[in-house]
Amino acid sequence: MFTTNYTAHGKVILLGEHAVVYGYDALAVPVQSLKIKTTVSANPRISTLETFGYTGSFNNAPHDYDGLKYVVKTLQEKATRPTPVTIHYEGKIPMQRGLGSSATVALGTTHALSDYLSVKLTEPEIMAITNHAEAITHGKASGLDAVSVNSTRALFFNTKEGATFMSGKLGNGAILLIMDTGDLGSTKEAVMHVHQKLTDHPQFKSDMRELGRLAREAKKAWETHDQKQLGHEFNQAQHLLRDFDLSTPKIDQLCQLANQSGALGAKLSGSGLGGIVIALCSDQRIAERIIEKSQDLIAHAWTEEI
Image (cartoon, rainbow, N blue to C red; front, side, top):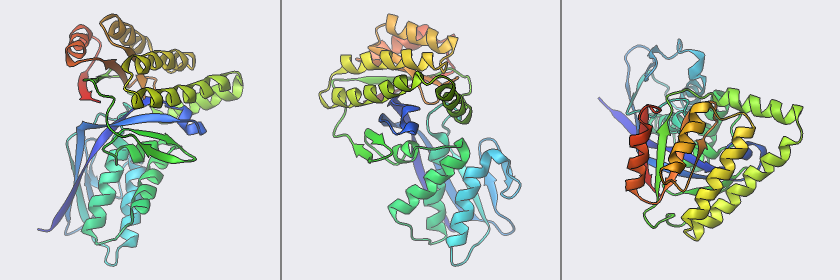
């Protein structure tokens, strides 16, 4: 049986979450240790999805899958000969944690299904489909997630200029520790919360600008391999994100524990209201120490050399 597949990885925003939605800057890194493989094969009857949360008819998939359904419908419409398919997913990136799971699935499905249906897409077309699926899923999308899960390098991003890919790593053995609180975060809810905050309290607009400025400073720190400065910006950003009420008591506790255990800085990453905490560590030993001390607070942890 003819099949096609494509494997895509997750991502983490280092600085600039939420600010990037309002046209400011963000810095993100791919997470190669978290991957999802999408496989497309023939189905003799109807198109079906085999996902982590739903297995069944494509047409009956719940609204949570509307972004993915958009990808499939778009590719079928572009195909010369649309045909029923089964789309299967392996590997797992925890959903609603800010790790790019929906963008990874959208990108992988676009690639695998376009190959299966012999639809020749340009890179901009692939990115446009992936990003529109993200907008459907989250209510609003900056484009950062789509380009991040498609990149093997760290990238600096804003909606006006797009992505600037960073040369090399932060280096000197720097480790990014990613800790899953186990609490679901809702990007759509968090985006609406921030919008309401900015509408009701205009003074928060200066905090949003500051989040963008910290991302620009983080870019400089990356380029000069200044781990301590990047860690300082983590802590500054966490203070601002907490002011937006995007943090939680568990996130605050994890950030404090990480910093007390030797991290150079720690913050929430992604939409907040749950999700993940990232800590910048100068080496693997410090990351392992933080994991050991955080076991009662986290569901999972990963490390990525950056």
